[in-house]
Image 1 (cartoon, helix red, strand yellow):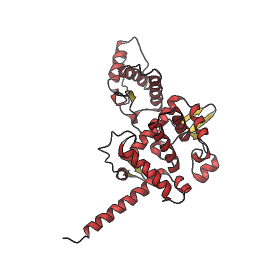
Image 2 (tube, one colour):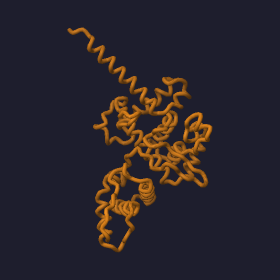
Image 3 (cartoon, one colour):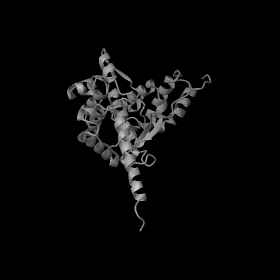
Image 4 (cartoon, rainbow, N blue to C red):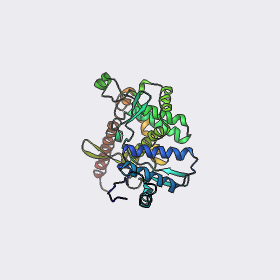
Length: 295
């Protein structure tokens, strides 16, 4: 095999859209074969696909090719793990690697990377669907979630007047969302879930760059990012309940106006306001403590 340098992804953030599609298709194969494949089988097949996507033509009969595939497979423990519940794709990225999904002659647009264009109402609905799925798994909930997040492009008028990229989430019914999800490939539907589930986890522990500043919303969830980096998508524990509580409280309290105005507010704007209120309250508490008379 001719010597050449190939860059193979070593983290989720290095995956290309082509890589992500192949990984999702392979994950779907694992799911439909009843998890008969071993973690080594899957890592080897993933290595083949990654090498092909990054410019190296497969050479099945070449010993050097086989050696290289096995060497790359040895590095993929960040991608595939053999857990107690079975072989698992350990998705951990807020990068949106399925930017457009084609269904027949129609193109469906998903949310932007890092939740940049998610509205609070859209997030609130998607979060409720995800929680319902994780408590009582069903294909219907996954389809509804995918159909909520992936919608046709907004009209020019809506783009101009409401600065929307996608058809408004409040314009359709659960049945319409489910039909959109049913028209998508199963690997695409699961990819929507994987992205949104990790985004929910990252929202409670990660760091965002907003207006050039690094921001973390962890204080709102009583979470230390360093201590909770392995918590999975708010499925269990205080992160999930805190996120659910914030969703419900904001929806009911009209902090940002009427219910409709709350739902039409960008999610990260809502989170920034909550964080500012929290930090102001903390400053007032510290000032009050300093001003207490000494005993």
